[in-house]
Length: 105
Image (cartoon, rainbow, N blue to C red; front, side, top):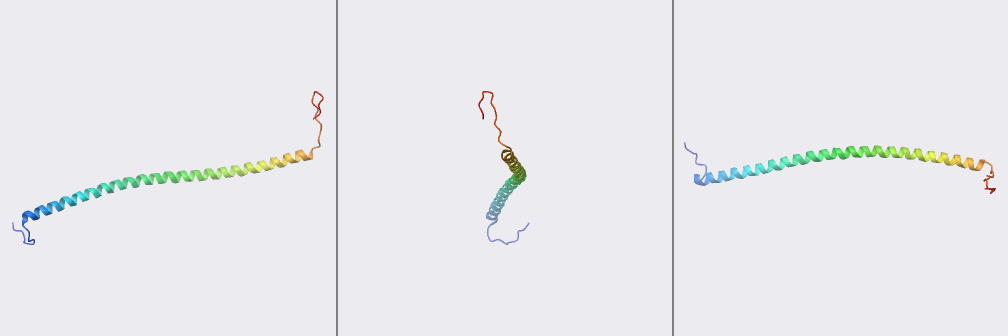
């Protein structure tokens, strides 16, 4: 089999050069594949964490809304009860309370 005379260098040098080139390319390719797999795993982990944090944030926002609603209700109930106590205190005549020992309060 005859090899076309494209290269000026001897075949023994060309064979070594092409083998080294191929081996370097394979090593580089394997390194990139390994890095690619690692990045895919990391991406998957980060997406899971992002979803978990997003769900937690949504739950906490709804919890804050519920706390705000209950706080408003408690404040309005407090205001109503304060008005009622003011009406009771100011509208009722003062009465003397007798204590059994004869002390008037």
